[in-house]
Length: 206
Image (cartoon, rainbow, N blue to C red; front, top):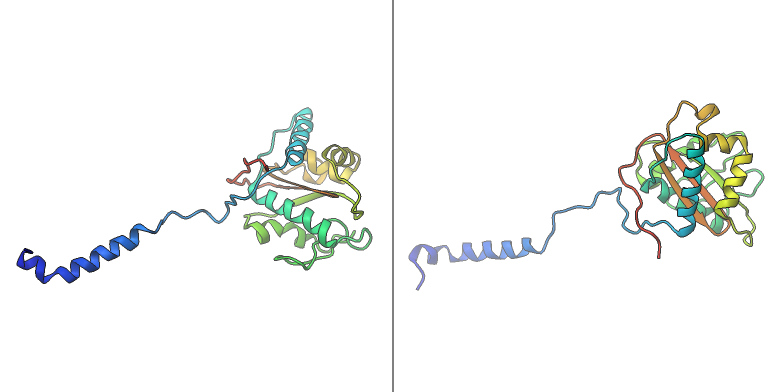
């Protein structure tokens, strides 16, 4: 038999018990927006990262941490270039973005009139806190296969691309603290930034 006090408040206790049961089914731990559990690096992307870091070591430059945000942007861009072909090799180069994604489209020409459209992609796509800078390699030809070795060899011969890799010329005053790698079929993209990304990519693609 219930105590008179409990009997009078049985409906209140029942409501409290129901509330506690419902609360038990919820988790209040939130995953930071920057984290992407699906993000991973392929064997080729790992290889390109290792090649670039080895080359920087030869130049007595520090290694750069792999950034989750910049890798997300790099992997998104190589697929956009390969599938949607915003670059026609003439008026619009490989820093261009198509209008077929959740980002601002732009045609990047030789005059760099759309440079900010490219620089801001890490913030626009991945919520990164700073601008990023890209070097790219590939061909509009779907039969072309972009490889890490060929990409690095090409960038070494190009003064502009090489300067980004080794922090020379206009990049001399910058220290790269984050890097992202994207390799997909006929394109390769590498992104760098002077701001560190606390989220790195540790997962290998299966």
